[in-house]
Image (cartoon, rainbow, N blue to C red; front, side):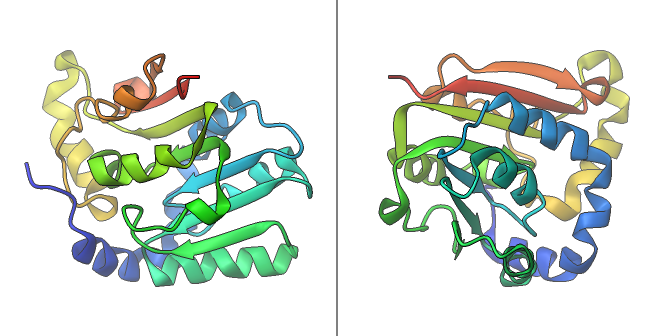
Length: 210
């Protein structure tokens, strides 16, 4: 299995940015379920990893309020432009958007974070350097929540070709797709993973050790 390829990701999201929100509609319940599990409170600082078009921003903002801080990081300029437009329309003065690879994002000026949201960010979860950068910016005890895709369990394995095909536009590697959280668990040892959508997706939550 190959490592995540940022150049291929840039090309793919350039093509898919305009239609991304519509394509993500079917998994919105999982996105919201993951965010709700963060139990955000007014004033919290939250990092939205690979935030895309900012689909998670409204629910995150509702939770943290104007006293909170929201930082989104997105690799694709086309996706980030849509996220920035969402910020501008809502006039969120407490939201910051960084256009960068997650491995290279300068998070120190915005840390520490009380919570981190990963929503369908498979490539990031397969990058040791990206995870190290993220968790270096987290407060001890920070809450972590994930929603994402995975391979089906063994008894549905014949359908995994469809799972790969369905996810191919949105990830550049299938490495780790059986257990996408395997690297994350090193940083979040109490991570609890629950299957969703007949095992083709999952949600997970836990805490950075205190």
